[in-house]
Length: 304
Image 1 (cartoon, rainbow, N blue to C red):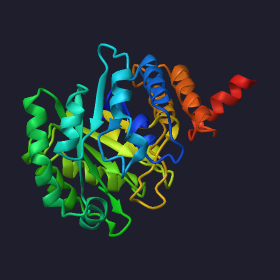
Image 2: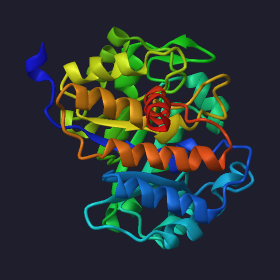
Image 3: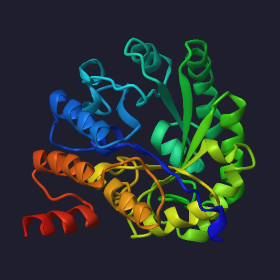
Image 4: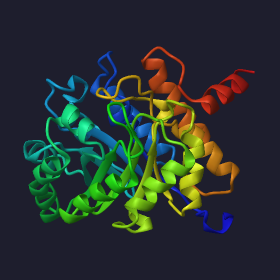
């Protein structure tokens, strides 16, 4: 089993976008920019920075232009943004992201509650966005939510995941994230969702995105590694939840994933100490401890 475990993993830190989008406290653009700078200084090569949604829906992301223009971009680092529609894409393209993210749910009920339309309609809506991005030379990622469970429907069958992956592939999406949005997944369920996705996308184009609501995210990461998956999303200091998934806690903390991977001799290119500093920085601004066991353990140890 260990033979298929990758020797290298690439992490996308989604803290600045997915992590901060639901924070009640407004986070100034300068703080978000500093967080991105600290993440890239720690060795992150992919960072999900912001979202071009209506500020009416997600006020925290209303400063997208200011944040994107404030970043001192580093060669070798990719900056991605969420674009929910063509209007969002047209605003985003001015800021020259390396990749845009479109999204769809494997759950019909979640799709209706989250974006007020069916899965098929939601993907159809994204077709012109994907085409515009590809024409502009911008990469396209598809975020697949509720791939193992849904707050309204319960368990999600792998067939639904394969259906969604096929729709995304059909409109030209180049790679996808398999997300356990509400954190209910367990290793075998997550593997089935990944296997369903792999019917349409190659192993290099599939990433795992696990929330830690039930404390399963690291186990699920290991289960994904066993299938050969080597791209993962995580959030510095475990920031974030989902505004439309009641009770969903944050994404798995980047610090916890990195500690586990380094302990398995898997290369990430990330400096754990500098990553912990980045998490402590944003947690300090939000006036709370990082939602990362590794960060808290090592910060306590440092304090001696």
